Image (cartoon, rainbow, N blue to C red; front, top):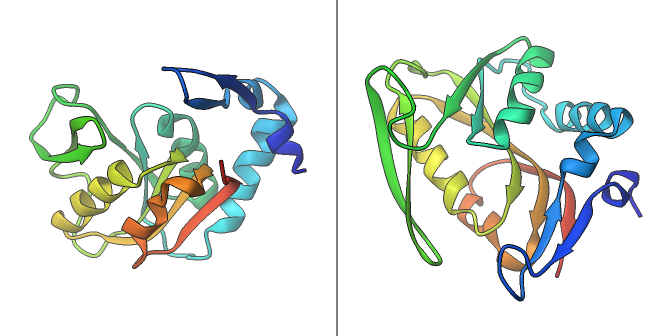
Length: 173
C-alpha cells in the first residue's frame, strides 16, 4: 500500500450514511505526507511552460499555491459565488443532488495561458469540468489536472477524457 494512502483516515457514513469519506487532514498534518504529496503532484506535471495553477475552493487552495511556487507559475483561486471582489466569469453545473456555481476573476487567465487545475479530489468530475470550461472561456489552455485522490468508481475521469489527468491515490470502492 502507498505510504500516503496509509496516512488518509477513512470515515464511514460521512457526510451521510453509505458514504465512505477519505479525510486528507491526517495526511496534511504529517510533514512527510504533505511534502511528499506536493513533490508527487509536481512530478505529474510534465509541461515546463505552465503560467498558472488554479486551486478550486476550498481544499484545492491547499495544494495549488505550493504547486505554483514549485512550477514558477502564478496561482488563481476559483471560488464559490460572491467571494471575489472584481468582475467574474461564472459557471453553474449539475451535481448528482442539485447544482453548484463557481467563479473566477475575468482577468485571471489570459489568451493562451497554460493552466494546471489542482484539487484534492476527483469524484464525479462535475466540478473539474466546470473549471476547465471557465479556463477555456477566458482563452486559456488546460495543460493538465492534478488531484490527490480519485474515486475511480464514480468515473469522473470520463468527463475529462480530452485532458491529461493525474491522481496520486486511487480508490475503487
